[in-house]
Length: 277
Image (cartoon, one colour):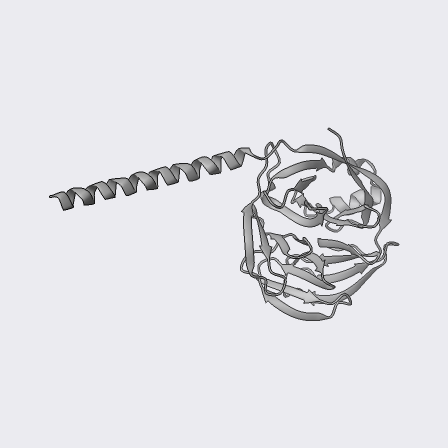
């Protein structure tokens, strides 16, 4: 009888500890969800515009050595690695055809990394477009950036993941979070700038700034005012398909200028973000 009583007591105690543990986890999760501050508002001040010689279905964009590197890809469309001069001339460095759906792009340690959407592949090139190797990505591929050591990518499902650039082994993952109307689940094309992550929210006019340590959206820029300065020809090219949405962020670290474009946009806007509150 004493032995049975001790067993029952132990069982109840363990249940109590587990219940307390679950309560603490739930409380911690609820508290974490409230930790994100209300996002600041940004605007984008345009300084100049680059007209492209050839438009592409932009999935990734990055500035390096005075030029822009671009990844393109879509269902039934060409997956390419392009080089864009600042006068707008576009040169294709690598063409993967229609066999894969190219996605985000970043450059780390002199190598170009290009995601694919559903094929679970990551292509690695040198800066001239020569393919060096491939890696496996266990998730969907959307946006891609790097913090100087890790690859950071999204998958369209509200997660930010860190990966080893040598193996693509996932080393960290955290949910993207926000206070207010901006939902960060579809965080797409990415750019890492001064410890923060800038990204397009796919199908929206929003570019957000995210804290990559917490996953919180810290600031939001409504890019709709760009519609007021496009030419009729540019408007016609963009409105030809509902798919031609804002998507493409790069930054020149020497000047602080951002390069902003979209899918099949014939132009790239150059300027700076500014806090407005």
